[in-house]
Image (cartoon, rainbow, N blue to C red):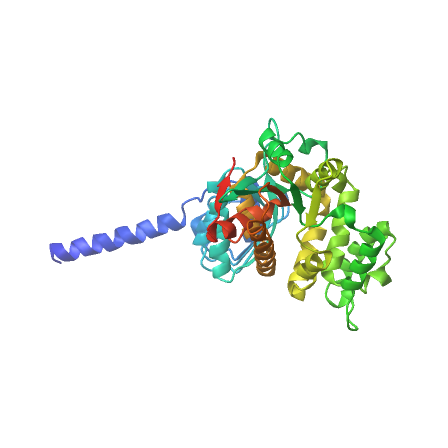
Length: 414
């Protein structure tokens, strides 16, 4: 045998040994709960090797919270991953799993770190592009803000005219206040207040009747045609607090039931619309005999909800039902975010909405931006102070974005 033949024989032998060694090398899984779930799946109490991990097609973590999925990318044949609890910081290992088709992510958090949030968004987009079925509950993890509340605040100007835009959170408590001086000074120097809807001008009985009429199925459909028996039972347990029994519940479309659940969630907290930003400025305007204008109607807002595809309505209903147990926690986090005035996180939240939700938000913003443009075509020179939901003031398609696109000078006042 020639030296060349000896060389290739030795090389082949080394490659085989290396391959076998690699297959039997112990794999490091950072999270103990995840590692235990994998060991349970393969029925082994020995060391977790690459060879064993390659055989795993499904991982279900039922015991304990998972804080890391580091190392899971070595399960190259994994198809299903179910993490029902936990707070995973880095989801990027999922993008290396080409066979993945279903992931139960549990709670997915947006934090005050925009770069980290972008990584989460990127992972979700990559997996969705691969048609991976994703199920997760979006949550916030925002530290408390010290000092006066900032909110989202803009000054829009054209020639000698000015319009101020201030982002609202519609319900809250005393922790929303005080609001920073720049905002209050701008309001006090304005001639008119414009809000989404002048709440004080509404008749509650008429509004409730109108909402119920719009919320009913127009045909013979029933809510139970679209959700499971268990879901119906769970919803009925909650709505009984509003004296709405199951048979009556059957008449309503999913979007309306979602609103009922939101009301129930709010009832279980100390938060109130009376302490929300809209009501705060409406009260100030009324006290100063300032004109208050509605930019939208109740009908137009309800149409935004009711026009959503039935499938998206059902998805939103399930999401609301799943989040009732954390309603107060999440609203507290939203208040932290609003007080901090973190525009980037608001923008990321806006982009997390459903396809229809984003379309409806964009349409509403186009209509409101057009009305704001009219202020610059009127003869008045005193400023107008506009209060709309904070999500309307962040990101592409938002009111500031549209006004700047139209040529107005838009300044975000941090």
